[in-house]
Amino acid sequence: MASPAGTATSPSPQPSPFAELVKGPSGLDKVVLRGLRNCSAEVCLYGGQVTSWKNDHGEELLFMSSKAIFKPPKAIRGGIPICFPQFGAHGNLEQHGFARNRFWTIDNNPPPLPLNPAIKAFVDLILKPSEEDLKIWPHSFEFRLRIALGPGGDLSLTSRIRNTNTDGRPFSYTFAYHTYFSVSDIRQVVGFSPFNLFSALPQPCEVRVEGLETMDYLDNLKAKERFTEQGDAIVFESEIDKVYLSAPSKIAIIDHEKKRTFVLTKEGLPDAVVWNPWDKKAKAMQDFGDVEYKHMLCVKPAAVERPITLKPGEEWKGRLAISAVPSSYCSGQLDPLKVLQG
Ligand code: BG6
Image (cartoon, rainbow, N blue to C red; front, side):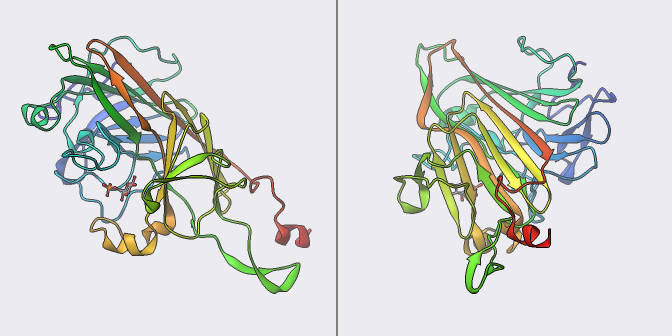
């Protein structure tokens, strides 16, 4: 299926069963992708940002703050903001770059990009720098983003960035898919062990991340100092802001209570950032509810430690595919409560 036609400023939607351009919150244009059964995704042209992804039961899989602001210049708090041309805050560029708060347009004629023929619901977007952007980041580029919803409800984002400088200059950037997942309750519960009622032990965690154990990471909360992660799955009891370096291509987020596992597959993105602001920082954010941190977790496939450099005419590709699969186990560990009940 062709992408729906239209631009951010002069949309001319071509309604189809799979992709439709509609008005979203605050009148922002968004493309609704509809897969088989009830699964869907929504992509806001402001930010080129996925703002919703639902499974075939119509359940929302991404976190979106109830206080998110759907208008420029702020990036929308939730979904999958695109961080480019930088991740983090360095130099004169705004934190996490400007791609997440620019208007993207629908790309009706993208250069060929192989697509599984079973995928009918997708949209191609493009971002090019404006005159104002060139003043803050003096490089000409074409950023093409394909967002696709697979027949099984899997979501994929493929970014292609090309250096279109005509003066022979290379450019370098860092990048992240700042993915906000919706989770049951991120906090590790400390309670009494059924085996030893006199000791308070952590009970089986509702939410854990697998795939990053034993990895080296830079801790943004400790002046980017380098550490090595311990050997167990990652669980959460306080603020976290870590850049895992050369992380594996597959990472899982296991949500015990929701009996759901998110499987992330990344290509071209060596690193993975894990972030949760916890209570104090949550309260300090204007567009984030005070207790919403309990129900979100950012795991962001990224290229942070080593910036990507492109010479004129060169193109880079970075892809994220996410699936949400039912899971009824907790990291392969036995749940003592259930063992006792059995
Ligand atoms: C994380 C950063 O990646 O993004 C945090 O490490 C930051 O420091 C967070 O607070 C959210 O950033 P922003 O710009 O969307 O508020």
